[in-house]
Image (cartoon, rainbow, N blue to C red; front, top):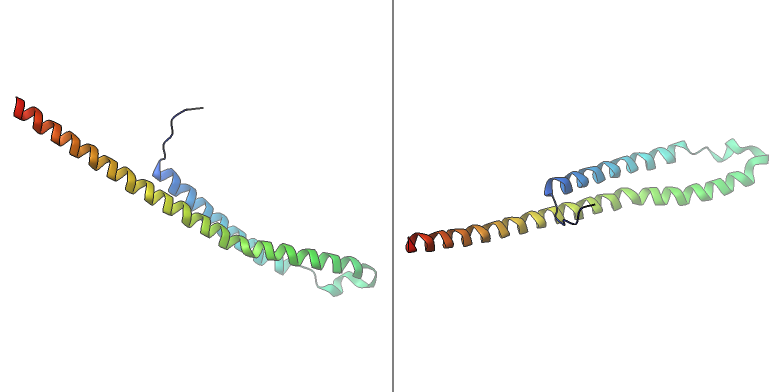
Length: 112
């Protein structure tokens, strides 16, 4: 394991894309899970108590799955915002070093 601490903006953006793909997948999974639920009449008279328990549990799961796409999309946006901030910070540091380098070169030329 490396002790270096740095962030590659391209890798961060790649993670953001992957999280967006997960958001799309969870949206599809949520829609499918609603379609896949059996009708209450499918349980029959004997299975009716189990059908009610299943239905209540499924409703809770549908609610959770329904919130996941927005949660993942929000996470992806925060990751993208972080990548942009890191990139801007890196650019600012590079400009500062370039200015210092130019100033030092100018001093060396004057001494020269």
